[in-house]
Image (cartoon, rainbow over all chains, first blue to last red; front, side, top):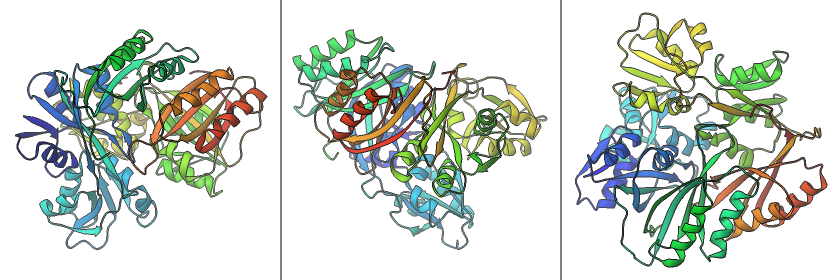
Length: 271
Length: 271
């Protein structure tokens, strides 16, 4: 059973269908938090959750939960192209308010701040909840997928109105046990904190450099105790099954005050 | 005229009052984006905007606008302790929905996911908009400052209910011209992107290390064209007026494909 952030018609739903090829049973959750907890508690085998968008950046709840709240592994990733649209009820002609999930609003900042600067912006839990609102109120438009226009009978006012036409979201598949598959095109993810002293991040990155390991991504998040201390999320090329990767990660681990191996898995093909 | 993210009663309003000691005229804006644009267009002299919260992390819109959309400088910073409370109308006793700004919701994730997991969560534009809603609907609670309970006549159901009692937000003051003050306790901020090749971040950090410069913060944001390319925001100790800092930044600049000096300014005392 594959969990995703519902309701039906969200990009997460689309990613779940695409990833499973429509062959797995899927189940929706009201929040990313709930989907991840369901895997942690063994209620479902795995979930597909967004971790990074090419415009909005990191999906904080996913990173924070993987680092601090659960013991789960990333076993795969999937990149979905995102195309946002401004939608409204068929009879709508005097839009006063635009509603959507905060990330969708962020992805359409340019058109909202120029052509639609007169409209009030309101946040919703999901693009589908926004679509439901737009369907029942002719003064409300929403931002979301084309699929939503079918589900809720909306017209498309502004097609593909995101700031960037190459907008995409990277999803990860999370499970209770790490993947042991080795494909030759794998990446590995870790999370760690460092002692708060000058040059400590530099020293950690030097260990990768000296081992010939290519770091493909670095992200920082607060450790939530006070400003100025961060947990770093790093992706590197290679599988922990590879001795070079194994020993490089082991050396990094010995430099950290907190360390978590988040999994080795096959890189998405369409990044 | 000092701009801030309104309406009255937000933590941004509190920060504006604290920073100016109540001695400057302040004016509210509906979004962070609008406050920053008003400075850029010369409509106001400066604005105080949130840039980082100790739990939620970076305030993306502030970072992205400073890097890509405006030519402004950071001339100061102020750290405000944040204390969130669950508030409701005096007659409320059967809460079904909790409303607040997405950051306030994130800051109270633990209590919302445990004691209040039965409640629907809804996002609002501001904590004040949420308070207005709670004041008029006894089934709705909101999350926000104690000041809001006075303004909207709400009772405090859960005082200081944030995940972390040391929750604080760092604000920056932005202006059209950089500060030239040198206080001896300054920091400098830059933003840059690097060629997407192995080890390029390591090489940039090595330049600071070799110059004896202490990096206090690194943050990454997507450049918004495609996944996998990032703009880095780095804070270092020292003022660009100092020759060591000047030459270190100059060397870093020559390593970058995009570079922006964001200002030297006095460090907040209470970080």
